[in-house]
Structures are given as C-alpha cells and as structure tokens.
Length: 397
Image 1: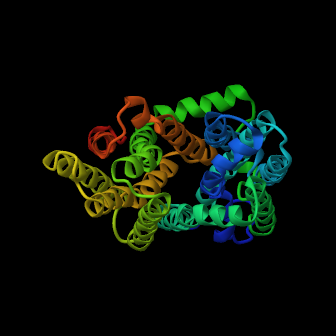
Image 2: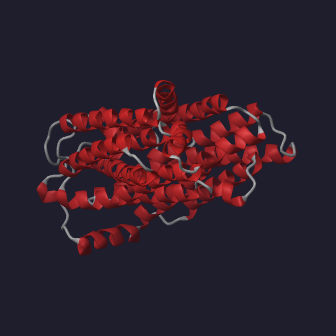
Image 3: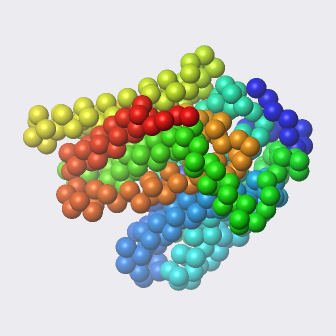
C-alpha cells in the first residue's frame, strides 16, 4: 500500500540501496588493507583493527541519532548532509598521515553511513506500508547483501595496484556517487504536517513511547539477539576456519562470499513470498534455518570430536547464515509497521541497537579464548535459538 507524504516524485530503489548499504562496503572493502595500514602508519595490528571498530560503532551511533532527528527535521536535508560528510571523511582517510587522524575520519565515516542507513529505512516507511513496504525492504536487503560478496574482492584488486590509500580513494568516489544519486533519486518524503516536535525532550519521549509498545519492542529484541548470532560468525569465522581447518585466505574469501550469496538468495525469496505469506512466518523460517544450521554443526562437531570436514562446516554455516536473509527484512518490517508515525526513530532503534549489539558481540569467540568450530557453532546456536524462542514468547501487543 502506497502512502502519501512529502514530494511525490518517485523514490529510487537503487538510491535507497546505496544510501543504506555503505556500511558493508566501508567494512569489507577495507578488511584486506588492514596489514598495509599497520605497516604504512607504523602502528600495531591492534591499532589498525581499531579503525574497523570505530567505524562499526559510528554506524550504530549514526543510526541512533539520525533517525529521531529526521522525524523532526525531514529526511532529504539530513540525508544529503550526511552524504557530504561521508565524502569529506573518506577523503580525509586518503590523506591521513597518522593513526589518530585515520581513526577520527573513520569514526565520521561510520556516523555518516549510519545516518544514511536509518533515514533510508524511514523513507520506505514514509511512502509504503503493509506487504508493499515488506517487499521493498526485501529488495533493499537483497541488494545490500551483495556487498559482502564483492567488496573484499574489490579491496584486494585495489591493493594489487595501490596501497591502503587506494581503497579510500575508491570509497571517496563511491561516496560521491551515493551523494549524487541520492540528490537525484530521493525526494523529501516526510511532509511538514507529519513531522514530530524537535528537541531532546520530545526525542526522548518518542524513544520511550516506542520501547513501551510490545509490538515494537518484541521484534527489536528478536533482531538484536539474531544479529548477535550473525556477528559471532562474522567475528570468529575467519580465525576459526583458517586455524582449525587450515584453509588459506583465498579459500576463506570464497566461503565467506558463498555464505553472503546464500543470504542474497533468501532475501530475494523473501521479496517474492512476502506478498502472499505472513511476515512472521517468513521470520520464523529464517530463525529456524539459523538455529537449525548452527545446532546441526554443533552436533556434527561433537559426534566427530572436532573432526568435521570443510564440506560439512561450509554447508551448515551457509544454512545458518542464509536464515538472516529472511529474518533481517522481516524484523525490519515488523518494527517499522509498529513504529509509525515515528518512522525515523523506529529505524534508528531497530537498526542501531541491533548493530550495536552485533558489534559488541563480534569478538565473542576470541574472548572465550578457544577459537574452534565447536565454540563458533555453540555461540551461533545459543543466540539464534534464543531469538527463535523470544519470537514465540514475547508479547506482540
């Protein structure tokens, strides 16, 4: 169902995909450059890795701040402003002469990218509702999930002909493209009559009001738990698979890319089925896939005493990860529908809190001290099963 509001020019889906999808590009394109950053800036590897951490935190904080502000100030101006900040911050990374400058620039990059992500989700809620909004979210998820498939390869190709600064030159150009396409393809979708009061007091009241609604709170909690399980995979799979199974960086990149491709496929299926199948049922399918795949991998590891081969690990991790292609857009739909008319605030809480929880969960396997497939499967199984149980038990309002 289409909704009225703001400039009636059509909203460009590719533009929405770009403004909401900078996060994966900003992370995965840059990952192959971490050793080069440490060498070029003469800093420890931990400092280079910190440039990933501050970016992820910036993405979460940017979502939490920008969504509520856009409910009061409108979408387009804030979106274009964050686009300009993204270009400037990316260019600052190119010329950063020391680690401190790089970390500051990466933080601003994350903040600006997070703002675009939250506002883009709110734009969909402004214009669409019901199954049509769900289908749009499924389309965006499918497009955005392509990034983890192609971004590491892009970063690796750039490093063949340049140093780490070449990666940031690419990000600067990509950011400029995002800004241009957003300026052309994303009109103002929140008309003045629909805007919320400005000020910290009103902003806080909107947040409290949303969190008090069971229909909003329940999918956000489920999304946070499910995202934590997914980020356990992101944070631990590289070390686990390369150390225990002895695969090289190249083969790991293929494993990671095929798992991401599986999420793209399930996102496309979500887009196809959501017009006929209830969103809650599709979310349940995704959660069952994630918990079932992880639990099966855990069982295989226990039965084989940690001797499961690459093929079994690859397939079962792929099933567990693919479930997110159903779960992520489904929980987004449920939260956004329950969060009207404060669509920006709803997007910031559902996306920002889930991303923040996920980022804090990323080093879980390392903190445990034993990085094995068994530990990875256990963490993913516990969290995804908890999300599944929560989706059934939490009051929905």
